[in-house]
Amino acid sequence: MAEIVFIYSKCVDLVYHMLAYMQVYNDSNLYSEKYISEFEKYRRTSDFSFDLKYTTTKIQQYYNQHFERLGIVNFLPLTQPDEDFETLKERLLNYPGFTREDKDFFVEPFVTALEKESLIYFPYWESEYRNAHDRRKKCEVQLESLLRPCDRVFSHYQKNRAAAFLSFSITCNGRGLQSQDAFFAAVPLPQNEWEAEQAFFQLFHEYTHQFTDGLLNRTIRMDDGTHDLSENLVILTDYFIIKKIREEMAKEYLLWISASCGGAGTSFDEAAFLNLFRIPPDIEEMMLKEIKDIFSDGI
Image (cartoon, rainbow, N blue to C red; front, side, top):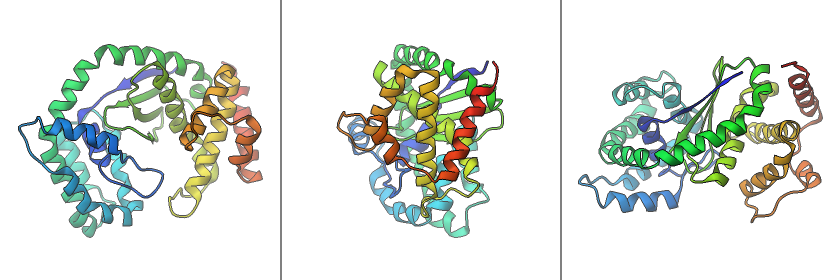
C-alpha cells in the first residue's frame, strides 16, 4: 500500500507565484489575472516595494520563444521541495541545460526577481499557511480518501508513495514529476470539499502522465502536436481507470473535463467525450492493454 504524503514549500511556491505573473502561449500557462489582482492588494500593505508585473513583462517574450528549454523552471523546484532558498537559486543558475543567452536574458533576471519578491512573498505565504491550518487538514483527509482506491495503480507501477504538493500560488493546471518509486504532482490547494475533488482529478491526471507518456515512445513537445496527443491519452486513460475503481465519480470526472475545456457547467455524455478525445488506433490498443494489465494484478 503506497504512502500518501502532502507537501508544502514557500520556496517552490515563490517560483509558481512568479510564473502566475507570466503569460505563456501554450497549455502549460499558469498566468492568472485574478491571482495577480489579489496579490497586488496585499503588496500595497507591505513595507517592501517591487514591481513584479513590470519585471516579468521584460522577460516573458524570451521565455516564450525558448520555452522548450526554459520550461524546466516549472519542475526543477519540485525535485527538491525541502531545500532552502539559496540552494534553489544556485540550482536554477547552474542548470546545465541553459545556454549563456538563456542565463543572460531570462535565468539571471528571473532569479534576481525571486530574491526581491521573496521579501514580500515569504511573509505572505507563512501567514496563509498558518491561517489555512484547518482547511489544509480537511483537504488532506478528503484527498487521501479519494486517492486510496488508486492503490491498484500505485502497486502496478511499484510506487511506494503518492505525493501531492499543495500550492498556494498555482491557480490553474498542475505539474507532474517523474520519480522511480513515487508519483509526484503539484496542484492548487483546495478551498473547499468540491475543489478537493477537482484536485484529485488533477493529481491523478499528472500521475497518469508518468506512465502513459512512455507509451508514445517520443519526445513530448508543445510545438509539434505531441503534447495534445499525450493529453488526450491521459484524459481517456483516467476516465477508464476511474470508471473501474470508482464508477460513481465517472460523471463528475466528465464534468471536470468539460469545465477544463471551457464548458459552462455542463457535462459530456460518454459518446461525445470519446468522440472528442480521439487517439490513433495503435495508441488506443496500447492504452487498453495497459489498463487491462493494471487490473489483472492481484492485490
